[in-house]
Length: 283
Image (cartoon, rainbow, N blue to C red; front, side, top):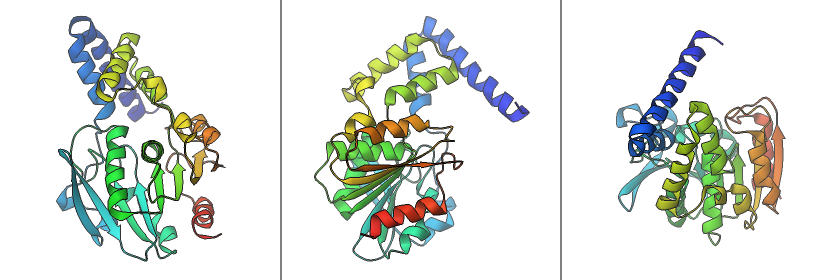
């Protein structure tokens, strides 16, 4: 383990130890802190002065949903519209390597910044809120294709589950997690937080979103999806395990599972993008 990784490991474990000690004397504060660490992205925001070059020459639009605002970026093309949905601690600029492949089709491409990411508002990220943002964008732009990466892919699955009757005809999911319970389990293991905090976090989700952790499953949601799709996952993904992609694919009747190797979590690859292009644009 190199010095940088060692420092990060010790920092993470120190935070976990602090939460454990705090839970003994002030459990409410310990819950607030652990929930905030799980839902508040540390990076991914974009200021007006730091807009990446790939997003500069786009049509930018800001929309309001309840008290939240979210940002979209559009590369104009023909009447075929594609909606791009990025993942955790990222923003719409993550699609820079993907865009050239999609633009060969001449399509209009719209990217959305997630809650608390890019130029969208807020501090807290969660999949139900992201799905609400996605639905507003779908209603506005009427895309026939949606592509999601990482937890953005999970949000696409959830959106399609709760809003099956939309303009979307095809969906591509890249490196997406399936089970919220697995994400929280991994988070607790990473920080070495005591199991009491898991119970409290589960209760918090039940109160906030009216669902149990084990019920929030991409694999279960995918069983209800009727459109065609691709689920791609890499065997060397150290952020979201390969088994999570398999769970989503197992329930999706019209979903085709693609296994990649040595791409990691980013999933940028010429062969993969060409396969996706054929699926989307070639009958």
